[in-house]
Length: 321
Ligand SMILES: NC(=O)C1=CN([C@@H]2O[C@H](COP(=O)(O)OP(=O)(O)OC[C@H]3O[C@@H](n4cnc5c(N)ncnc54)[C@H](OP(=O)(O)O)[C@@H]3O)[C@@H](O)[C@H]2O)C=CC1
Ligand SMILES: O=C(CO)COP(=O)(O)O
Image (cartoon, rainbow, N blue to C red; front, side, top):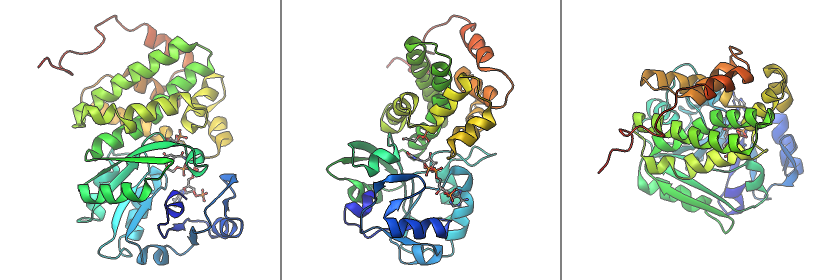
């Protein structure tokens, strides 16, 4: 919607031809955002090959569990010059591999970029002020994509740290479940702020261990999206936490939300990456345990609060200059 509004010829593909026909007829996303108009210039195409064969850039926004399979489908269809970008937040399920690694492996040699940051889809379509960041393999493509997205109501920044940008966008979903649980249990505003801040520290620990730049994690893709998702009730991940904190069983909460909740998969992958690097991330591990049904939210809280007292941060994370 944003690209089309900015005057870029834009074609939307989706897996459900009926939903696309409905969208074309109503110029609304009837299933997910029925009350918001889509720009008249936005085109719809149910045939994936037809959608991508003429494209200069593709922007992939399927859920992370469907990402690799979609790359495999489009690989033989893409024109040689076509650049690849994505706004999906997560990892390859079961391996913890980053999406930029999957793209490099399956679509080698193309300019690539990730679009990420605090951006509830509803607010973007509604034209409310939003700021995101575009981190790319080469500056020229990141800049080109940011220019296409940038608008009077939409700021697109650029960067070159795809790993850091992707880590923040994925990990904030897990941390949003924790703050949602705390709010669902009515633990108060101090608890919420404490969880966001200690969650940010967990993101920094994992990000730095993996090679992310701290300033990326402290920027829109990390801290920015963490604050949005931990505090904004439009977040599906936060809403999952709220439901769990109120005692709703996981399956019922997932069914009720009825949209992708990336943390359900991402919590395992964050845990896997942390363990590979010998990191203890108590909030992320607690969310994973709650999502697996290994502990109740009350038990997870007790475990967090009973941890040993210690310095606020490890001095080797930020060594003195
Ligand atoms: N919503 C938001 O505000 C933001 C979302 N994101 C990220 O975007 C990604 C998608 O989220 P979002 O669109 O909100 O999720 P939704 O649940 O709202 O929609 C998911 C979409 O992906 C489609 N889909 C599901 N599985 C497949 C598949 N195997 N192949 C092709 N299409 C598929 C669904 O089709 P169907 O309708 O037929 O089920 C649906 O159109 C996530 O990684 C999310 O973190 C990033 C920034 C903001
Ligand atoms: O990533 C998002 C906003 O930036 C959307 O968050 P949820 O997936 O939790 O709804």
